[in-house]
Image 1 (tube, protein in one colour):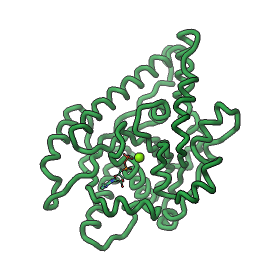
Image 2 (cartoon, helix red, strand yellow):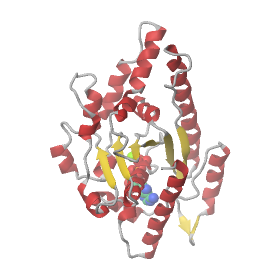
Image 3 (tube, rainbow, N blue to C red):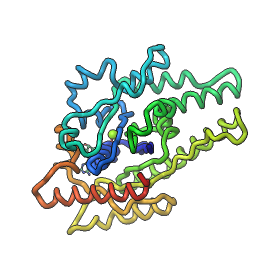
Image 4 (cartoon, rainbow, N blue to C red):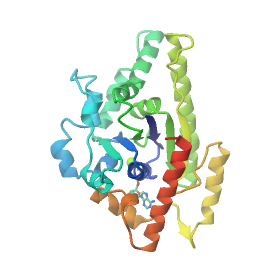
Length: 307
Ligand SMILES: Nc1ncnc2c1ncn2[C@@H]1O[C@H](COP(=O)(O)OP(=O)(O)O)[C@@H](O)[C@H]1O
Ligand SMILES: [Mg+2]
């Protein structure tokens, strides 16, 4: 079982759309996938279930917020008990692979504040211990999930580098970075990589307080940047995008050959029906192109991640 975080501290770059389509296509190909929505905006959650259903059946006691809260309010919540199978996509998959999820909650914003209060300590040693304890939380939770249950856990991260996001990184084997090819987004990637490296080196330094060559070190690896919302002219990505793709490669980060093109109509429509674009059958030619490009991206993801 691999754990992959989908992240970029910028919002609106296609993280959620990428997560939903990747998970759905992998399940279509027979994989068992669990997606965890860690973004308080809950876009991934609402791409699979209706807000009314979330309100009635999930909001009180069946979201990732309940699990984080259980550490401070001494309730007992097991991550496994939050897992559910969204209906519409499940019908579409028709028994091929499995797509399960854990829903998010707007109140997850406060969880970051709560976690921050658990950091610090009277001594340096105590601070380091608290840092490890807080940052390992999701990783420990995921260990409760039977590794035979899923081939992959995909975590849709919020657009920030707060503590909840960091718990996802600590839990991950790989990081996938969706990005738009424009000036500000490429600046963002550089910043993201530096923040990631800082977290990894702090964590691995602190781990040494208990054992010199501890096997508790983390080494989440960046799988690559996948460019999203690419504009196409005459069947090709427009040339204005090239410099940004090259600039990212110059940062030493692997860039997916496959990309996700821009198509407002189908990408904004799909979430309300609970089935990601890649699993829909479109008759119009451009839509079919979008689907085959998504499939090609998933193939490249499989090759790069080895799942
Ligand atoms: N390839 C695409 N073409 C057109 N619109 C897209 C595409 N991917 C995502 N969108 C739209 O852009 C908005 C942001 O996408 P989303 O995946 O939610 O980004 P993020 O999770 O990074 O905030 C959404 O309204 C979504 O429908
Ligand atoms: Mg999102």
